Image (spheres, rainbow, N blue to C red):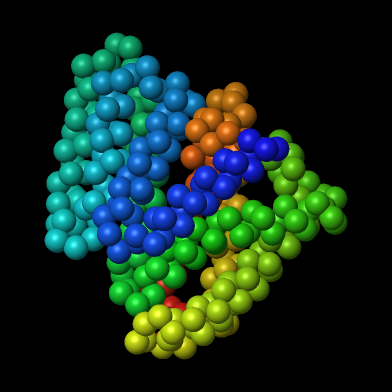
Amino acid sequence: MAVRLLSSAVGIVIAVIILILHNTIALNIAIALISVVMVYEVLKAARCTQLRLTCIPALLYAAVNPFIVTGEAAKYKFTVTFIALTCIFTTYIIQHNSMKYYRLMFIIASSLLISNAMSSLIILHDIDKVNGLMYLIMGLCGAWLADSGAYFVGTFIGKKKLCPEISPKKTVEGFVGGIFITGLLFMLINFGYSKILPHFTEYTVSVNYFEVCVLGMILAVVGTLGDLSASVVKRQCGIKDYGNIMPGHGGLMDRFDSVVFVAPCLYAFVTIFNIYK
């Protein structure tokens, strides 16, 4: 327990530092490092890391992607993606006798999905100079609040298992409770945000609380799907955790699996609906 708490404390300190430096390249660097580790953990779980020649361009793509999703650099994104895929397929041709096609597909899918999903946090941050930081926070909270809420409700009243073969500890009651708790907390967080913002900036913001509540509930569902999807992969790979980079918590993929689904969903939502006016 002490190791787990210490690991959590270190993680929180790092997160706070990144949020403080959110308007600098530190955010891009942090997302790049997290993305690379996540891709590596998934490829290692599926026993693809032995194909080093193919994994190298996949990991390099994950490292570069967070720096080319916004601003002037965004015009190079297609080119970089094309180069990365070309390199991956070239290594497949070289190793075709020892490399199965499904491993190729897994490497491509993992690198593209994880790196682009995590990079969407950068896009969310840069999409609005006033509310960008709040979008970034919601991208993380949308994943973690639902999990915490589900755990809290499930501990007290959880009886019916949600997906016992995939995640034995998840319950239907916890899942439903997590949805409503996330919706409620999203409204409370944004209420606080609307009151605090004018004291630190020259801007004011009006929050559409109905849309914010709906957003929180949607992200809770999507985040659970991300968690369960990652758990399925772990089960089929025969592992308990993706890594041990965070003692007591597992790997970064174990912590950010929900974010992989939540961040792109949040981006889609805020481009369609105006939660701030």
